[in-house]
Length: 184
Image (cartoon, rainbow, N blue to C red; front, side, top):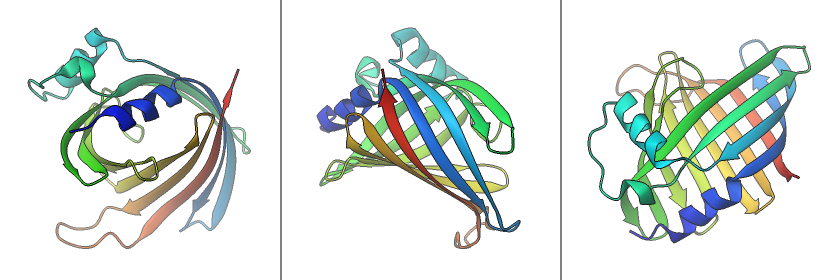
């Protein structure tokens, strides 16, 4: 597996980001705008091992070569709601088909639920898009980060109501769009 391009993607993500997002809550027919200050730092070897342990993931080859990050963010919505969170994430590539790398995406803390979580990811080297799919209790979140250049990313978030086993994901609960610009 060639990790050079995904490593470049994560290297570009290191730093401070100013994020403007719009969220569409489908059932409520409500639109919310928010501003987020987002800080991304490299993940240490010790924290890589902690993320694996928190998720009871087991041993991984070349752990120090795996892409990952630590992040902290503070969001303020146009309704005055504020959310802050810190977490660590690790990406464990498992296969590569052409330009698409896929594998597991582990976090020591999930966004929707306060617990460690294992998700899946694909990363397409041809357009530098990271797609992360997380099955939460009530929704399945499909989150895309498109790296336009080292200082701009486009974000798309689709939260589907979690379907019954074997049923398609076809009912959206939330759609989010964001423009993320590196600052400083």
